[in-house]
Image (cartoon, rainbow, N blue to C red; front, side):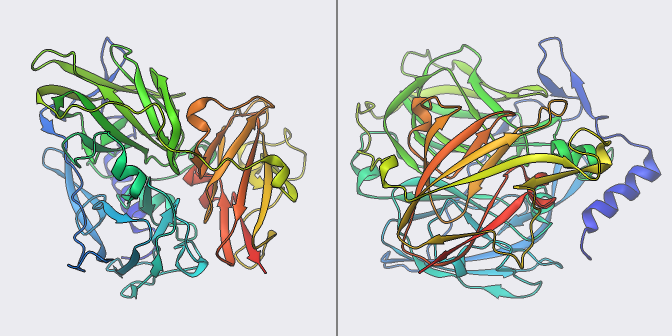
Amino acid sequence: MKRRTFIKNSLAVLALAGAGTGGLSLLDKSGFVTTAEAKGFTSILPIPPLLENLDTSGRAASFAMDVKQGTVEFFPDKPTATLGYNGNFLGPTIRVRNGQRFQINVNNSLPEVTTLHWHGLHVPAQWDGGPRQPVPAGTTWSPDFIINQQAATLWYHPHAMGLTGEQVYHGLAGLFLIEDEVSDSLDIPKTYGVDDIPLVIQDRRFFGNGQFAYAQNMHDVMNGVIGNYLLVNGVMQPTLTVPTGQVRLRLLNGSNSSIYRIAFDDQRIFQVIASDGGFLERPAAMNSIVLSAGERAEIIVDFSKESSYAVISLLVDQMGGSKFEAMRIAVNGKAEVTTIPKTLRILDIIPEAEATKVRGFIMETMSRGRGRMGMGMMGRRLTINGKKMNINRIDEQVDLGSTEIWEITNRSAMMMNMPHSMHLHDVQFQVLSRNGRIPPLHERGRKDTVLIMPGETVRIISRFHDYTGVYMYHCHLLEHEDDGMMGQFEVIT
């Protein structure tokens, strides 16, 4: 298979069959998308297996990962060509501890280049897994570093130049969990797959033959490839059975570009206990949460008052798109009694006065030749500070050991109304403000990805410590990233 094979195959099928990208969906009276061919809520939610630690002593974390092609029948008798880590679609959950040595052999069995980026992980630049660390077809990449951060729900995915969106869409993604003495000590649900449940939420669209419809036009580049089917852990409309009591859900918006508002059908209150980079200082009570592509949140839901076999629906509003009944949760059996602590972790708040430099970043849609509003879609360019990504250019230099404030503005053209996000490699940051206002409680912990709406300015602060080298910053709407809405910063001594 050559580069872009999946797109070429899908285009060929579309041309032969005359199928459209929306031809498989059926909108029911409730307004939630159902499917004409998939059997609704008959599948059990699959739990990604924990990747086996090959170091049986447990002192180190030693793993093996094979990046390969596969097939999945999302629709009966219509096998879809997919990609996966150690399987057909998605990947196993990697679980490690702070302070542990981490080693992994990543074998690329694909016929094209890929990378493996540790999203949210604080790592030496040479092991970051961004576009500067390509893994050619048929080769093995072997990162080796020390886990050096607090307990958090992170994830991993490819980050090859211009291929990130396509490879993630076809299935390359998985969770990366860090535990530490704080997560050990908290009286919260922590039995993986029982009352501590990972949920990788992604939307997809399909051609008439069941293949992924990742065939971009300019609209898809500008707005992202938005799907009309929703997958949870790689399955449409699954059901999860949980014990009565408190249940912890680790939410990942693993979509390419969609922004999700996540809630329950009865609008029940849940407690947000962690954001991208780990535990909040105290729980935040909410009845819905918005996550942009790449963002994570850990929530605790109280099912202690449910009668046996009660069924609760998890709803996902694809903001600006469809509304989905994503999955159903059936309550059955007793859980261990847990309480939600009033204090989760004492955060090391970074004071603004510590910052020695303030940098400005403008994320916008520009037009070639006639100014921002002067040309059609084909003339627009997605840029940061007026520039598109150049692997041979360092855009910012940051001193090792320094603290900086980054002011990020979404200068989206009025007619475009285009959201962006900002993801920083290597570091976790603290959100200082949104348009001058203090961020909501659930955004006051450590983060690595932040949503920035049109016309909004978000100020973040971070410490750049431990490692030197070149890292990325970019919009995590993957079609924007692949189109060049990305830059490079170098940490120097």
